[in-house]
Length: 489
Ligand SMILES: Cc1cc2nc3c(=O)[nH]c(=O)nc-3n(C[C@H](O)[C@H](O)[C@H](O)COP(=O)(O)OP(=O)(O)OC[C@H]3O[C@@H](n4cnc5c(N)ncnc54)[C@H](O)[C@@H]3O)c2cc1C
Image (cartoon, rainbow, N blue to C red; front, side):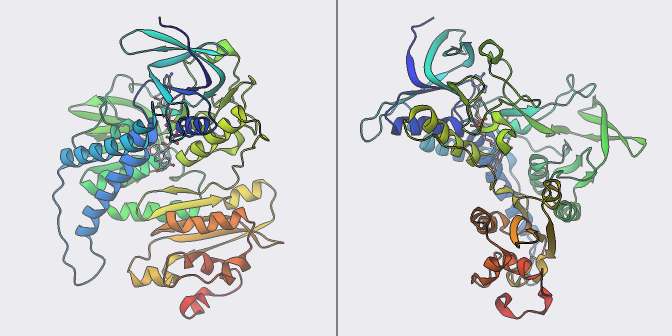
């Protein structure tokens, strides 16, 4: 075991949360060290956001070529060479990781600030200021920190289904590179367990590359927690594309069958079995709080196994902080990269700076599901507003009323707005439609500044854009949007 080294900030993990904290520590002239048991950069860059969005776009090109929306364009069948697609994905990821992660560590910044260090290996607390990092070759090293940040992220949650442990299955780790679980061959058929964003993004992607996809979820619909109009509309779109979507199914058993897998479910009182070449388990994610010695240092967890934090992201131990996926829904957080990065910086500030501590504010977090069309949401759903006792009113309009959607022959989707009725303040927006992930930023800024429907209506929007959907849905509370001329006026 090598010598101790004491850092101002000791970080468990090296994902986007950890990096944001380490970079801000460096800006403050403090020493920081990260630890990493897998690949530098964490989930987003290596096996989450970036690889999925790279391949999803390739799948969209394949689909659009085969299904041109314009009469006059002849459908074209693009050959899908899946191993080559995976190779280019790995290349893009390696390049991005080198540029945005690897190049930052062990390097002093321009003003000669202390370097950010990374120690590879599995990390666990030994005492409240000390961790032990065990490298793949079995050697270990202890690190100490004046302040400590837990940023160990989350992992796929594997449900307890009889037979699953003895059957080969995939998780979202199939997107990874340089690790054994990377998927390099396109499955002929794919059974997906789950109805959340990962199941939907990957399900549509594989179907577009040519796999026969069956998505099985136990909820009454896909996307629990989202507006029902959005879930219904996306279900219809995906079914039209050829995905089989089974809802209300309780998984009972999994077994190998021939070269593939069989999943037995109970469905509305009867038994059904679905088979496919591969099974992808995408049911949920759990915070990485096991096996890191939290019990030794007294860091409290919530019922979901996430690290409990206060509004300053301080855990139950005063010099230990937590941020990113590992805090789950604490402080109404969301498991998403920009949330962790935003909060990692707040931790570095609160832990290391003499200035006034900052509180997190998770009331406005725009989110996107990168299906085609995209789903984007911000603020409260109808149900959430009601649960909070907000006297609200809601309207949903189809995107067929948006001039741009008609002009580009893609009218799929809907937009829903939730208002606080007495003040007409907008408290939530959900959209399924082309470029929804871009449009949602206008709504997010509006929520941040407590805008009303009049603010959306008074704002001159670029014509013709999908952002006009926001203006139109705001107008729809008082007028029939089918009876407007150009520019929603
Ligand atoms: C398929 C998929 C698609 C996604 N798409 C998006 C998207 O489009 N947009 C978006 O915003 N978010 C997306 N996400 C979520 C996003 O990836 C996460 O919210 C984000 O990466 C969390 O960052 P983090 O730093 O908190 O944790 P992570 O990035 O997971 O980093 C934690 C690191 O800690 C390491 N670690 C854990 N335990 C130990 C230990 N004991 N010892 C040593 N190291 C350890 C892990 O190996 C990991 O590298 C996606 C996730 C998945 C799985």
